[in-house]
Image 1 (cartoon, rainbow, N blue to C red):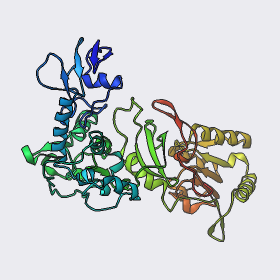
Image 2 (image 1 turned 90 degrees about the vertical axis):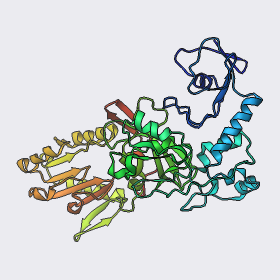
Image 3 (image 1 turned 180 degrees about the vertical axis):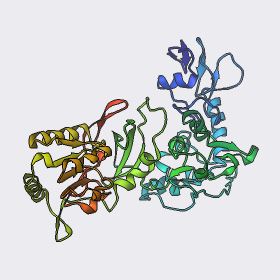
Image 4 (image 1 turned 90 degrees about the horizontal axis):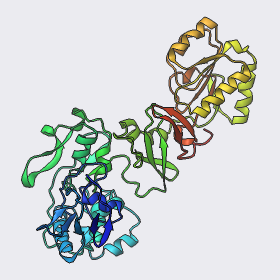
Length: 446
């Protein structure tokens, strides 16, 4: 049994004081500790007093012992905590936090001001999520005794996907630890020493010249705006956050997606999905918003007439497809079902084939070799396929996809498809069946 601030809490062998305090809803401020990372003891904000032990101790690195009596928030600790935080703020653009007009400014400013250089909270894309700002409000900071020192480090924009402004860095070490100890990449390290210490790569190489996979985990754990996703950082608070399963492959990664104005604007790993120890891939982390919001998506059904594809509605295209299929025996019709269909969509296609007595159902590119052997005349594909123009027996192609990919130019009929973020369903992965949640509405008639 432990006593924390007069409250008796159960002792758990092998846990730190901070971990036990959090499990019992006792708040201890910290900037370097993170639930996914081992203890580090960099920021010193979690200083606590253990009765019978001289001095102060870090709650994040001190193992709990049975019988401890701990104080986390008396006047002496508050004074020490404010002094430590004051030193942190002296090397962080913090003028907005201590500005006398801060409350008035927040009330009447409509949003973050987009700027190339972050000089305060109102030009920082991380303003609404900044942990430094949250602690400043918790400690009721109004003044700083020390002059604010701006490091004048160049903003690093020479790599794809994210920007790095280490003028905002507080050396908490979260990004280094998640890169080394969670992702196992060892790309980020502390470079230089003393006052010149900064975060970077070995020999200050660009990330793209290292083995960095751009998983974005460093961005997810950063407590300031030092690391930010380039295409996702100016949207502020989303209208909604929805969690779903990725269908880019069958690993079963879980996403949390930010929705703004009916569009996906940001993607990150699902914070509650504990079995996912490593981050999501670069395509899932940074490319999906651009992918799903692209202007060249297939949005309407189309049919070929006079060598041109004309848009139409679902009723007309349904009648057109029915007439086309009825003109051929089932043995001359084939379906190609991509692996990236939900289980429900796959079932509907197979049920349709059963009703139409279509037995030619292909699921791999190798299966396409059956087209000339069986004299297939009509192919309905749910994915862009290479080499379709080489199959001379094909007379009609029904093309259903999210984008006009390979084979689109040969189609008689084009059907828009909903992306996996635009439908409910189930997807069978390496982790077993996973739920697919509808995040946004499909565009137009897709």
